[in-house]
Length: 344
Image 1 (cartoon, rainbow, N blue to C red):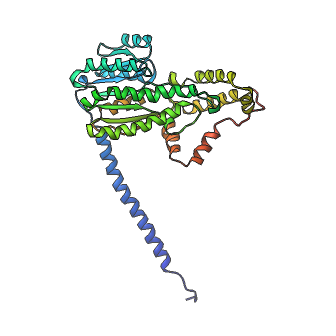
Image 2 (spheres, rainbow, N blue to C red; image 1 turned 90 degrees about the vertical axis):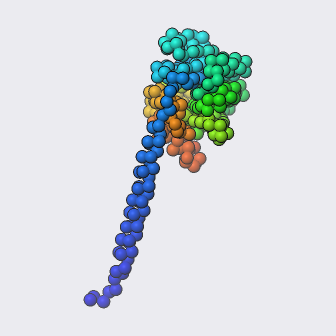
């Protein structure tokens, strides 16, 4: 009418494109929802007759191991709990049933590991060992790498990785006999190294060992799971201990390194850590124990369990991001070096 040609076909094409996009979204949703429902139902299937199954848990003096030993004892499992100290073993014995038995174990001493494996063999007999929870671990010294000696870095690796592997290999024949479960307690520190020290190297190693073991044991009916907790309130992560260790190392450092970091480095760093810990530290240890229980009693245990608000919403998503983003986030929460003008 007005002599101007109008692109009448374009709105139709756009409408069809929007309809196709909506159809694809609905199709994906229809596939995902039934799969999720199926997975949830399958995830809930549990084994029966837990009262005749033996579970060995390492590191039961305090923290996750202690809480797990008490919880599983109440549920009727036959718990074999290893403690690092006599005091830890005596206290656990006094507060649990006769089903629970304790023994001292330093996972870094080969003779200790051998003695414990023989002790377990005598107890479980022909039934074998249903579950092994490798929980024993230490934080070690967390500090910049150039502050540390080889011994500082070696210590957590010896406990958290080599000790874990040694205990597993020593008990593996008994676990294979029962076609049982192995649960390795790793950490989000095995996915993102947020600080210097041997702790993170040890947990990266646990992740690698766990993957190799899981694939090798599948043919024997042994199921291997890995639990990666975030930052929880346990003696392992006590901030005062971390700061105390850091101060001790600081006093031993050469003056040129102190000058590079600045005299107020520890005070500023402690302040930042305090703010971060208040934001992300979890306090309910039963969340981690639930993951252990599921890995030990589910007919279809998960390959990996991630637990803790910080793990779910910060560390694990961060571990999938490009390293430049990881570095930015982590360095944003570190002290700017050198520290010069700061008043406590």
